[in-house]
Length: 305
Image (cartoon, rainbow, N blue to C red; front, side):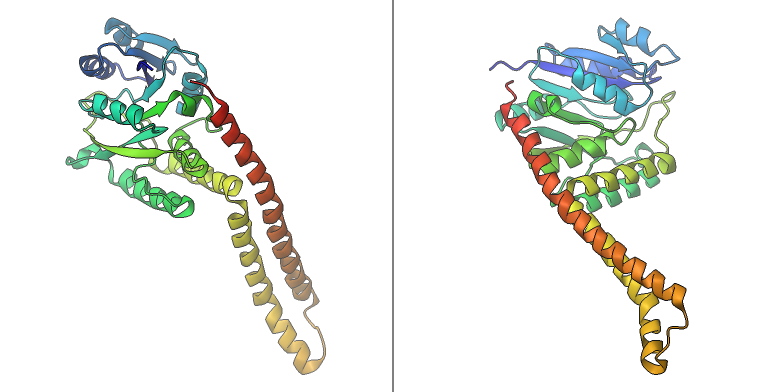
């Protein structure tokens, strides 16, 4: 099968960089189609993109996740999809070799592992957050993806057309990674030089605000994909609370034969009930998750590129 490459660039107010990104990509991938998905920029991003020969698609719904939903739902004649940010921070000089690896070795997704030598390229808060979340996700899902928030990825058509996306904003990269790991898809990494943002280009990612959204999404995905683990931890938490409240009451009853702190006894009993309910919720949801997993897998396997 002949390689048909589509490059999709989610973009918002990147007039100073989008032209450079398109120019660099055209140097190494002369036959690839390039589409800029603009999230209603207020500067000259659209004009610059068209000037450098890219097609532009407008997405009205705000948020990177909504842009990616539009990207993945649009129907184009391609079997290899590249997603890259429009801020000119990713080095694309070796993109052809990475595409050859994905195509030749039948990967579902390749993720750019950002390598930076300039401290200004990657804010310290973002580095720490990325490392922390990456280790957490890898520990839960048993893999070794070192940069789960990378905005530069290469996909098979089968992957993007069977990806059940829920996120609307910057959480989308984490969701892509977790979905691939949970489904057992073939995922790999390639090293990529990460450069400082050029003058005039401003990051739209808020370290704290978007970090909290990402944490919330990861916890929701763990609940959905690992319900027995999630609710077992919750069950243990409630049983510990029950014992902490209940043991002093049991001791008191053993010594005096009386229960003087009745509200505390009721609270301890309530925590015990919540513990058992949490555990059995986990068991039920785990069975449902396995059915959902099989449906997703079947949808993936039946997809014809």
